[in-house]
Image (tube, rainbow, N blue to C red):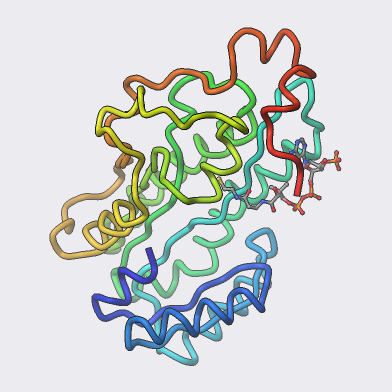
Length: 253
Ligand code: COA
C-alpha cells in the first residue's frame, strides 16, 4: 500500500515493532520509488511511541496527508481455547491500535484535510469459527472509521475501510489457511486469490481526488468471495473436537 502511494509521489513513514526489518524495508521503498521513506519504531498499543513517530514525521516532512491504520494480529483459536489475554491482545492491537493511531495523527490530518484508510477484514460479516478475537476487533475498526468520517467530514477529512479477501502470499493467508490444504479456488468467483496490487490500487484510488466524495465506506476487495465463503476448518468437527485440528493449524511463532 505504501509503495503504491509513494510511486504516485508521496514520501512516507512506516511503523512497526522491529526496527531492523522496518529500516531495511524503508530503504527498499525509497530505492524502488525515488521518494523518501523513513522507519519509526512503534507499537500501536503505545500512544507515546505513536506521538513520537508523528513528531519525527512532521519534523522531516512538515505534515501528514494520509494515514493507513494497518496493524493487526491474528491466529486461529476457538473461544474455548483462547485465553482472556489472547482476546485482549488482538483487541489492543487492532482496535486500540487504530484508535491510538487516529488520536496521534488527527491534528495533522485535519490541518491537511487528508484521509484515513483502515485495513479490516470480511470475516466478521459472518460467524467465523476460531476468529472471535479478530471478528470483534475488526467490527470495532469498521465502526470507528464510520464515526471518524462523520465527525471529521466537516473538517475536510475522509475515512474509509479496505476489507481484503484472501490475498496471495500474505501472512494473513499463511496464518489462517489450514496447513496442508490445497488452497482450492472453489469459493473464489474471480478464479484466483487476490494480489497485493489489488489492495495497493484501491489505496491509491481512495486517497486520490477520484474518491473525494467517498467517505465512511467499507470497500471489500475480495473478488466477491465473501458471497460464497464457507468455513475453512471442517465444521462442526473443529468446534466439537478442537484437539483434532492441531495438525491443520500453523504452530505458534
Ligand atoms: N492461539 C491461542 N492463543 C494465542 C496464540 C495462538 N496461536 N498466540 C498467542 N496467543 C495468546 C498467548 O497465549 C497470550 O495469552 P496468555 O498470556 O493467556 O498465554 C496472548 O495471546 C498474547 O500473546 P503474546 O505472544 O504475548 O502477544 P504479542 O503481543 O507478542 O503478539 C500476536 C501478538 C499474538 C497477535 C502475534 O501473533 C503477533 O505478533 N502477530 C502479528 C502479525 C499478525 O498476526 N499478522 C496477521 C495479520 S492477519
